[in-house]
Length: 132
Image (cartoon, rainbow, N blue to C red):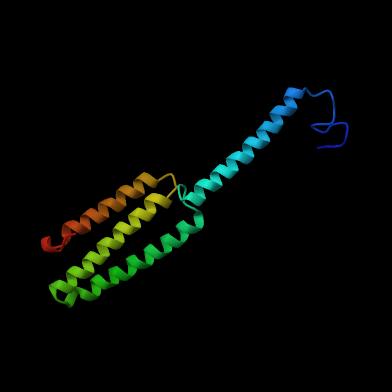
């Protein structure tokens, strides 16, 4: 493209004043939208990708630790098994919360449904006195 003096957006008189003004308005509108999106991210309305990545990692690690805790408590007392199962259940719920907020893929609904089903299945298998 040639942006020399003969063809610049604002240089020639051949362009209508309205056209120049609408171009300027479009540029200001795009700038406003960028600032608004940044404000939403900073306000926490739209999760920032870095926050989601760190939360997903932390919740996954917590889930793995609590799952290992359930396996380790298998030969323990009922109270220890119950505590381990409650920690695992809490970790599953935390993972669901993070996924609900951070999953932006096309299968978000399917993923949420599968995770909720896994949580409900685990809860149903917990001893009655141990359920959250």
